[in-house]
Image 1 (cartoon, rainbow, N blue to C red):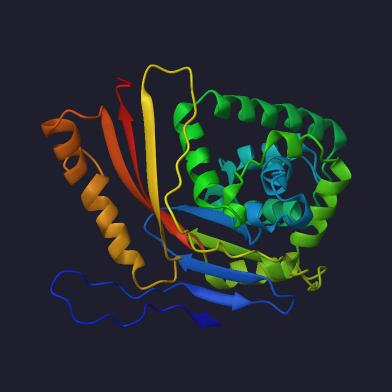
Image 2 (image 1 turned 135 degrees about the vertical axis):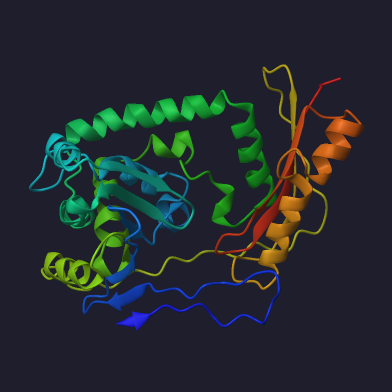
Length: 330
């Protein structure tokens, strides 16, 4: 067991960071378990993090494999149907959901404390035994295609896609997490299953539980649930570095909308850089809310935009510092 403790900060009169009391274990098969006990309310969040996202899709890069699995892993396993999964969580008063990012896929169940055992069972089963039933797969294909269509109709979404596709010429961040429709349409269920089998292995999973729980009991239950599953070798995925940008890049797209959407960005370091806190603070000062500098100067005083904001995006590889604005097309 390892106790996760925050690094001792320099003395400060402004900010005092409490020590973390989270407990961490790495089981013999490589599964990582992190538990933070919090007995302030009789609830808990049970999460399974898989260290695979849209940048890890290798020869199917741009297909949205990780996003498909986000949709599919609660749709049936070798021992539970989609209805049984949903009913078991409903019976304990839980809420189930998931999301996909560039470098991770996260599934979570929020439950009253008495439902933690059930949540761990359901999540463990989904991580290791999903069957991707053909009927459910066909249904979700259409759901995802509707997501594509909705994104194409959203000017903010399109501006974001154009921004990342322009800022990144070589790195997989150039592809949206959902993928590109032309590549997505070429996928088969067998290819999705193969990706699932190679990436959803104990040594690529992290279970995080926070709430009114007994940390040792959580560790023991996960140890029992994952005992049948040995560690497996993970095929390395080559992620090309983004080459230095040598000049300004600009792209324009005609869109059926009453307003113009402007997005601009600059390359910044990855999340491990010591500059990240300063960049986060800068984005807040410049463009977070009505009291921010850009909002007051550009919208309130100069009247040049209907809305303006800033962001600092720092994933595992170098990210972007950006400004978004909504303008009168004239």
